[in-house]
Length: 289
Ligand SMILES: [Zn+2]
Image (cartoon, rainbow, N blue to C red; front, top):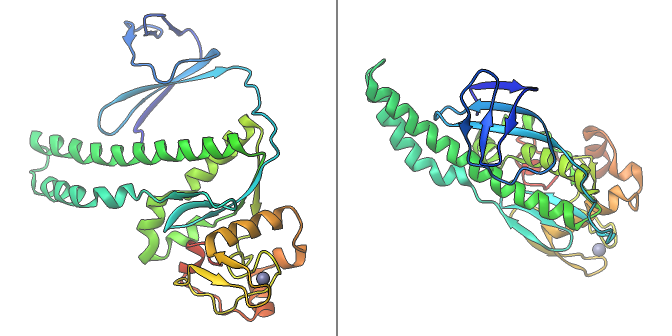
């Protein structure tokens, strides 16, 4: 998002009344959020395309790790629901970009009609930049909340290692996948996991997590994306497809599923399971590999 960035590694201070003092500059009044904890080490000043200035302050502090409650979960990421845990907790996909799309289209059309170099054009450009910024902020906020909750409440999370770049190549899904921003979320999960003492395990994305009954290993070959719930013909377990997938991810990372079943090249897996691989990657994108 940022167009300009300056790191100030030393000789800066933050006053108790909220003024930031930088070398050779008059003090700048800041709106501080959240509270600054620990010892400030450096500060990065950035400017967003909509003309706002931010100071991001790196601090050093000791964080007590979360209480050890031993909880482990599998986490299935999707487009319908953003994330589903093996305990059955669901986080909806907020689709922020999708929701702003109409407004964005109108504003972009207006921008395209303005004369180049005119004042009206730069005002219009600012309006478009503000919408993009709002979408990014909303997404950031909701992902921070979910990743914080999950890493604080659990000691281990197993999640699919997604190849997002190859998924985005699917033009039909590209916008939805960019909007859902799994990559950003996985980054948050990893660093928050480090802070709060929660291990994040990545599971091979070609593992048939949706098709496999997490109770008896039966592989349901005819499971299509439209089937949200199914009954295992072998052990009669009744599954919500996403919760079952999340459970499989957890079992695999705990090595309760034999390694040769979990780790294989895509072609080996296709050959062994007799699956026809969906080259459109639409299935993988919704966690139905
Ligand atoms: Zn079963």
